[in-house]
Image (cartoon, rainbow, N blue to C red; front, side, top):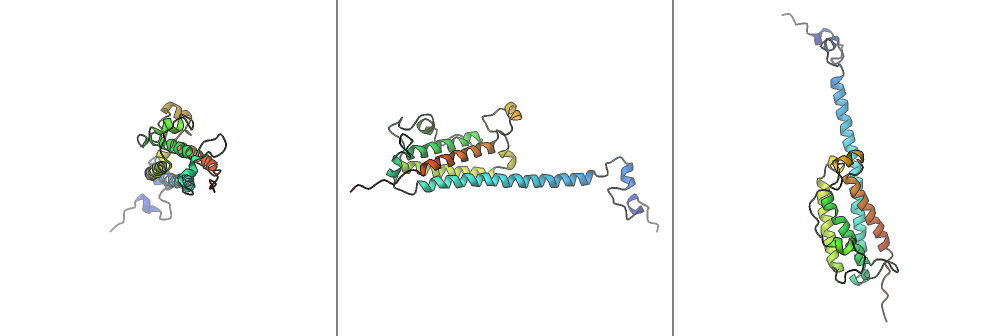
Length: 210
């Protein structure tokens, strides 16, 4: 029996992707290897993106925990004082942080705010504007519930979703300013939490009266 002289058996030392037979049918000899290299590069890029996003979300979680820990140090009345003369009270700052983090829900496409009334109480108006506001205990519960929800939503986001535009930027503006993405929103909120956590550290223990 005669073995057919197929192009790929003519020279066993030839690389299949570089032999003259493949070149003769006008298919780029390195198309397949190029595709493999491109796929590997895409995988590496995706892994790197996931690592960066993990660092950002972990930083947000760490800063949020700092605030949680600060509000667990003392009795609730401790946070009714200002962090410094003519500055915000601790209770107001916690409400303010809740309002800012709550705003990420619609901004990142997660849904409506959980506490829309907080925007008036703690963001659009200064401390002392309203006589009646939630208690420290109520605020601590809402802070924990909000952070749990955000953490759950963050864990479901894919890298390409983090790098997509947030809801306050138009497609046209995003084409010019791609840095206005959802990951940028989280970076900004993380810095915001860190800034106010630094203020809360200056709350002094209340001196007990004799």
